[in-house]
Length: 346
Ligand code: F1P
Image (cartoon, rainbow, N blue to C red; front, side, top):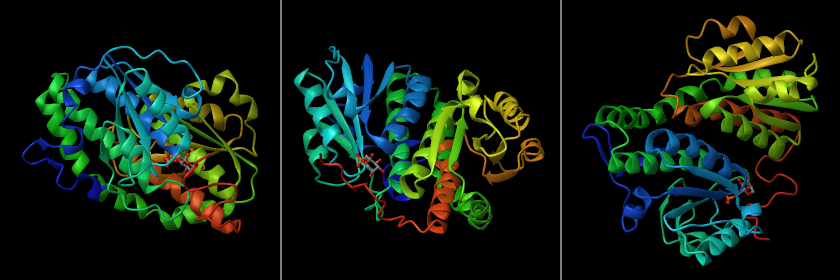
C-alpha cells in the first residue's frame, strides 16, 4: 500500500498526483457513468470503488463481471468511462470485455499490477498498482493495492468535480497515508487468528456477512477461503440474510461478521443477534475498543479504527489470515491452489 502511494500523495500538503490518468482526466471527471469490469478479487475491489465513487464523486457506477459483460450487448453511451481492474493484466475475460467496450466507443482506464501486460497495453490510460508480483495465485496484496489506487482515483475525480469539500479531501488523504501502519497493526492479530482457525478448520461451510463498504469485504473473505482452503463459503450483504441464508444458520455454521464501527454499526449488531439466537458461531471483525460486539460474538478480532470508506483496506487483513491458516492446517498448498491459474488466459 505504501509503495502504491509513494510519490503520488502528500497528505501534509494536500496533494494527490496520479500521472497515469493525466491525459484523459477530463473525460473521467465529466463521466456520465463509470462501468467497472473485472473478475474475482479484482471485481470485489470494483465493488468497494462503487460505494466510494457514488459517495464522493456522485457518478453512477456499474460493476460488471468481465466474464459476463464480454458476452452481452452492453449499452455504452457517449460520456461513459470503463475502468478495468486486474492483478495479472492477462485475464482473458477482462481483456475481451475491454475490447468490446472500446469497439463501442468507450474510453478505458486500467488499474493493473503487471507493467507492460496485455491489459495495460489494451487500455487508453491507467494507473499501475506497484504492488510487486503476487507470489501465490490468490490475490491478496493486489486487492489492497487496487483499493488504494481506486481510492486515489476517486479522490482526484471528486476534487476536480468539486463534489468533496477541501476538509473532507484532506481528511481522507491523511487517513489514507496512515493505512500502512494500521494494516501492520491488524497483522498483529495473526496469533489469535491462528488459534481461531484451528477450531474451524474442519467445518464444511462458512458464511461471511458485512454491510456498506464491508459487504465486498465479506465477498472477498469468502472467496479467499474457497480459493485456498476449498471450504464452501458464501459472502452476503448482512441485510440480505433474512431473505434466504438465515435458513442455513445453526450451531454448525460459523458466521464471519465484518462489523467495524461505521454508519451501519447498529444494524450489524442486530444481525449478530439474529445469528446468535439461532446458535450460529460468530467470528466478528470489530474496531479496536468495541465493547458491545465482543459480549455477543464467540470470537472477536480487532482492527484499528479508520474512515469507513478506507476500512476494507484494513478489515480484509484478518480474513486473508483466517483463510491462510485454515488452508495451511488442512494441508493445502496456499501458493498454488488446485484448479486455479495465476492468469486465467482462457
Ligand atoms: C482475477 C482472478 C483473481 C483470482 C485468481 C484468478 O485475476 O479471478 O482474482 O485470485 O488468480 O483470477 P486478475 O485479473 O486480477 O489478474
